[in-house]
Image (cartoon, rainbow, N blue to C red; front, side, top):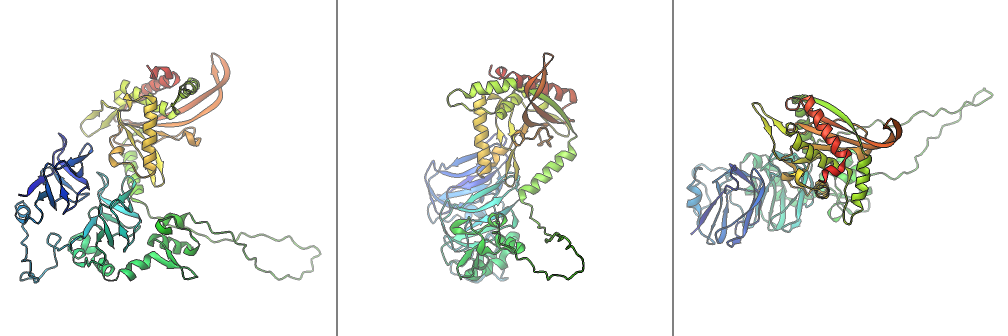
Length: 542
């Protein structure tokens, strides 16, 4: 007998969940204890295991979709078992199934709906996934597979730009890539048809013509792609060099190359099988060929002395428009909202770093120990926040929310913009643990391996540009935080100590505060505590 599995309540505050990943697909055998799916709650992404055995007959919530607790998640039963009664027993409008041998529709023929469109056996429709809790649309940065390619489960299909990062999206199915619904550089809402995978040669036109808003918009293109995969899909991907050799290039790379007048035959591709992608064209440097100099006929003159030639500037004005990535647009939106909604003010203090430098040398002399100045700043901030809880707050319309935990956001620059990985419970970590956490999170952020939930929940943020030689700067508050610390470079210079001018090392830090939650005196006291920790690092080890 079939068992109905509903969206579980995986936390005490959970009201709805999002299916991050299905680890089983319809038709798979499921054993008790097998992991069915990864589900995002309001607190974490958790594995959800099956308490039943049988065949996965139906998936009610697709990857990237969210649904309230107790919504139909899946049905497990005996292979071939009819579950139509269970599907029609919910609150949704029942869909009558036509007899198996009947080809004509009821009296008024209609285009198949998303619910009753027949999906050929083995065909899987992949939709634009929801890769973060705030993601509403995604942009395909690059396709790593093209129509006609064989795809194995676990292969990376595409790189997708979300509102937080550019992330690799892997396939959970094996088969042939039959259709691409969203081209490189294009954006689409979550749940739009991203791709279709199935047996080679399968006609999926009926699936693509289902009249959901997302599918209907792409149906004409999808139909052409299915009917003539070799002409419609291969043409944008392949160019030809002068010797007739095929050149693999993405549509976006071809477009940019055309705008810049670059011959794709001169560009070396870094994608799969030498495929030319966007970054290859953008980074292309043409070989310096000797420019032909126009010959100017001599002009006869009666002047006894020839005038010196005048070298006039020669060149061509140029510009280009680069489409803003989803991540860049969201950064602009959120920083704009922060800057113009929160009344910022700034406090700067100079810190004597002599003891910090000496302490770091001693600490790093220990075996298998590596501590940076940034680790010291993070530790000092975490400890200072515990002494000044007013800085560790969030403003809301009617209340100020005091956070009793310290989740430290660390600004990290990536190719597409800026991300802020979060070190949870930073006040409980040692200097070496902080350093290891920062290295791990920053490294995975730059290689697009960081998870969305690892960039959420910060209570305070640190931005450090000291490694670039920046002496002093101000940052925009990373809301809903109430403050952000900007850290400059350590500078060797003359300082006055005990009435004498001596050599010393100092560092300037600037605290940006939201005046709605942090008064000037409170911010100043926080900086005093921070300076005391940094100037006497031994107090952070107690």
